[in-house]
Length: 136
Image (tube, rainbow, N blue to C red; front, side, top):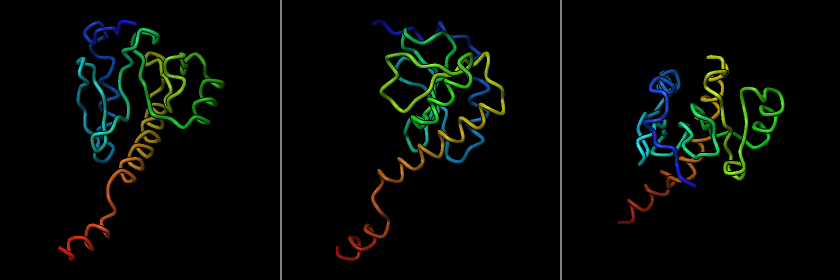
């Protein structure tokens, strides 16, 4: 499947996401290899515009726990959805034109917590680094 080029996405679609996301600690606004905007924490994906052709235009991809994702899609299918391409990942798709600012803030906050937890697990424990440093 061919990816939708980032330039076809509405220019302002990510602006509110960027504003809300950058208010969270250590969040960085950057772009993917295809030029589409993303938010990252410690270099790890937190949220970004969906570019896979299975997603609707101006859709946000946000890290989400699988059980939360199922509840969101069930409770508000006009806002949250999923495609087969994204189903096996801990993500939810969000129609930016329909999500309320408070809900967007909550989604990004949950995504931020998940991403920072994953980043911490990926980093070596600082106490181990001190011990190793003392041995050298």
